[in-house]
Image (cartoon, rainbow, N blue to C red; front, side, top):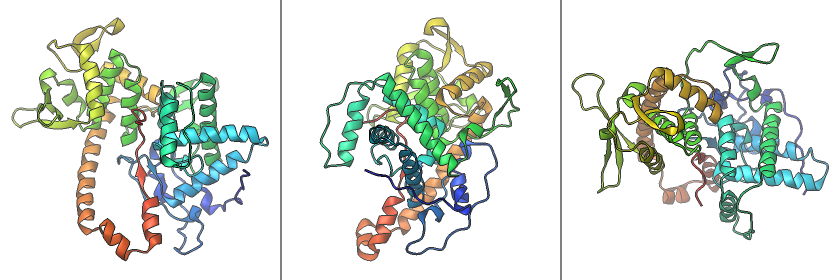
Length: 407
């Protein structure tokens, strides 16, 4: 199958639009380029010049399947695939893109119809971790068959060979590079945070503080849990509690008694005591995936008294001491490097927890108002034009499966 390359973009359409810069804010600290003028709505308009809805980094959305974003991803993928002279090598690259798109989108997208310019470093790191898991080929093949009902299930190996995973890693790097060259996203290699000296060594920059995005915290949970040892499970629980809105002081003060499991409802709540006298404290509810990570940590911690998250000696032996800020700084630095998340410090986590909590409250209120004002599925079928219904379906948002693919 030949790939047709679209004509070069105009200078106005080659820089990220104002609406998508918020989505890529955690990818780079550089100031965004000027946004292109909005094209008038109309039939036959170039989707690359149409504005995409604004997405908040604090929201749980990882990828926005808006027609504008899909058109950019399609352009980058087609340009990359067209660079191969051999049909065999092109098919290998297309297969690698298909595998990546299936993993990152949870089986909702194929190799071309995917917004590649929205992939951040921590998405790529998590995707490669999933690909290395035993049983990943079978789960990915199942997702492909579910999306394409005409596809016959193929016999696949129990695990991907290391050479194939490396090929997939290279393919992802090249298609993201193509997105950068087309101006759809700022080059990740130009990311701020540390400047390199003439010898190539990184010089630490002055840390001004930042807010971690929703996806970054979920990536930190997954990267920590993937180590499957006591330290990894402890750190995964730590970041999961930040993700649920608890600040550093509240987390370090937690004990075993803070974990409340309701056998009737099956819900697991973590109750943080108030920092000052009086008050009822705060309660957060853990999801099933977070509860599994917590159980893995408690299996290694045991039922001894002391803080819920405690220090560990060599070999993962539990010491039982409270986590200090100095230790948490080391945890933040090591986990940020592992998950491919820009550097941060413990105080950033407290601010991020508060910001996430406020964002979710606002989002719930907006959703409640929208639900009261929106049309039902039957009303949409009756009163909306088919093109409007299709456009609404294509604007769906998806969340990256950081904790692995579920068949």
